[in-house]
Image (tube, rainbow over all chains, first blue to last red; front, side):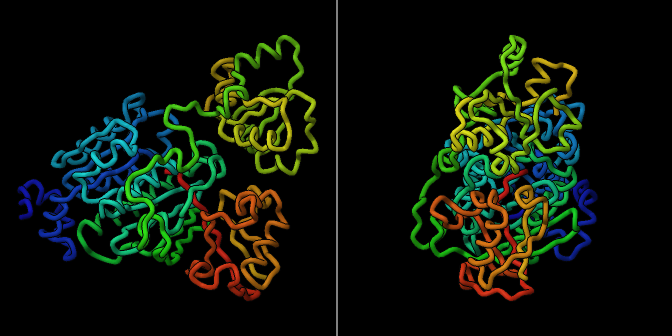
Length: 384
Length: 90
């Protein structure tokens, strides 16, 4: 029995009620439905806003971060007034302001194998708006094991992908990507940047797909992957098919319960310090400054992209963008002490691994990158 | 010549190009030509046993080459192979 709409709700949703594909019955269906949004960042912001506005009766939000100023260029569910607050609380307040007739459950915790089943249990559909591979595989596997649709999207700079992975009707995420890339191979938005409006475009597509799935209308992205390029303004689709040897949704599954996704993706667990490639390889900004001050000869290797020098640079550092490092190794001397750095330590960790595998031993990774240098040593530099 | 479309995360390894013309008559041949032209791209596409990494997806038109003839899928001079990356940003 679907819930009735109040007089106020009939007015609120009048533009939906006018569409024959939604109508009163569809709106009541939305009121009875629920969606769990994993991540309240670039994708989660528009998803949560539009699902709330559309009247999806119960929304769950999972995140464990706080609102940072660098989020606001794209994470539009938050605002300057909620800087420093828990993201799930900041988002919950905004959603309830937009639509006080819905229920918003905030889960201020990392989404892990230990809690995912409990958190997801009451929700009809999952919307994957995370920013990391372990959580993407976790969301996928949970949806396959529990029979829920997983509305997927991911973004990078100007490019976005979206699909609906629903193993009952089509392929799952693992059918397309059986294994994650090795850690560090694919840069994150924090390292590579993202056009602020991009997750807005892709997130609203996710919200559209979620609403269609909840209403049971239209042709979904099940079995199709949408590829969007904002720079070229192109939308393309490729066909996705079930992989008969898929380890979770194939006929002979090897994965029958949630696993350790950090281990599966080869990444350190939550709480690891970004920029550490093993303690022995790390040097803090303060220690580096002291050693330079004491006259130690250290070659500073900046592995960021050339345009990042406009934001901040360390005097005397040499630019070796990570993509060029492998081909420019002859320019480096393994007998010389070196410190590699990037913005926050992720790319330089990759550079360090590359250098170590090439036989360099006198090399250190600047922990926390140039941002740590800006916070600890040269306070005139901006943090970005 | 066939073309391989390079996704943004990998463009820094191909001098920033979005599309790279490649020589070859099959998917395997053009991929080998691609990494021969840009050796620093190799570890992103191939593992240490010189096999394509499982997360590398190649599409000819709307079809995954795995659904066609895999690496032996023949290519015409005018074909564009789309490399679809595994990205996680959100």
